[in-house]
Image 1 (cartoon, rainbow, N blue to C red):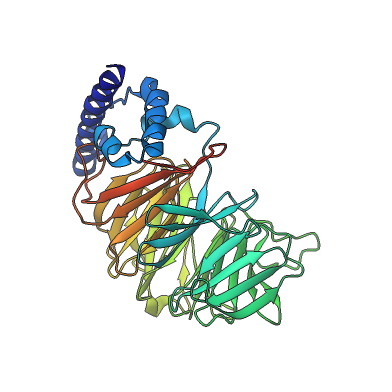
Image 2 (image 1 turned 135 degrees about the horizontal axis):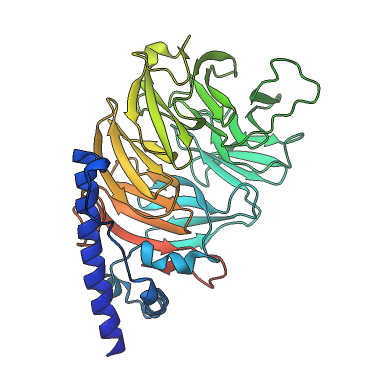
Amino acid sequence: MQNTTIQKEWFSKGEQYAKEINEMVDFGEKNGWGNWEGKEPEDTRSNLAEAVFNLLKTANQNGDTENFRAEFPPAHTPIIPLLENRSQSIEQLHFISGEKMVFMTGTSYEKRQAYLLDHDQVTPLDETIQAIGKSKQNLVFAMATPGKISVHKGWDGELINEFKLEQIKELGITELIPFNDGSKVLLVTSFGIYLISKNEEKLIHPLNEDNEEDWTPDIDMENATLSNDNSYILVGDQSYDHRILDPEGNTLGSIGAQSSYPHFCLFAKDDSQLITNSCHFYNGITIGIHAEQYVGADIEAYTESNDYTIIDEEMRVYAGTATEDHYILGDAYGYIKAFNKEGKQLWRHFLGSTISGMTLSDDGKTLWVAAHSGILHKLKLDQGRRDTHTIGNGNHYEEFRLLIWKDEPQIWKW
């Protein structure tokens, strides 16, 4: 009887909250937030969180998660009290094939653990793995272990290169991106961004342009990416504008921040556009420039210009991916949103907690999204909403979410 009461309260309040929050956001986007006169909706189910979590664990142990999910559609806000000592960042998500992908838990300065996810089965990988990266094309994977980076053709495929690390071997790796042919690796750390090859560990960002004696490459909000054809490298961080580089690390152009701090960058799938995000607190601005501007780009900071397209004026972007014709970006508030190259928002979908990583299947139909909450979501895009508790205006079906929490003896499927 107690469980029935909890279920009814969880379901009815959750449905009402989703309806109200969707109505408020729809109104704000269409009419301006200053015109909203209603009260902010509240999700008042946090008192149920511990009981619902215990029921979830029982459902997992009994192999009954499908029925549980129908009765207790997942939500983020009520379980925030459970996250305090359990949450962890999930990063470096990379699609492999079919329903298979790989990811890491922990940030660059923490002890990490790599996992393989195949459908809903999670397998821990070798605990010496410190970072995993994937090329933009050709299915080349890079794996960092103490003192070296191994590059393979395909997941678990032929070893095509190995780089012994010297002066940077102690650095925590924020991101690792192998070139499409495995000849080099772009390595992003909070102590500089490097090009790793057989011959050198070349610091390409930041640069000590004034030859200061006590200068160090110590940076925050470090971010970098490769173009899909590897013709360009894009780098930036909190203190230095985004720069466009050639494959050897030579500067070709610069893109000034339109908000306070350069924070994220990404190329379109066909490299016809690149976007950069700069942030201020939890918000930010994302702009795009076209391929013919890459060489010689000189976008002034904080300056309106016809030289760039405004993609979005709200999000502090933490993660993103490019589809054939648009971008999917994840922000500080726990939203993922899709934008086309002209800056039109196509849809938004709320998951909860700052987005920390995402990867898209090659056919563009399955998106895995991770958050700092320690939750990994698997979404089937444009497959219809699963329930009336979905927050957002996208048409996406959440197949499941995994609670990958610290100090839990296992990963819970919801």
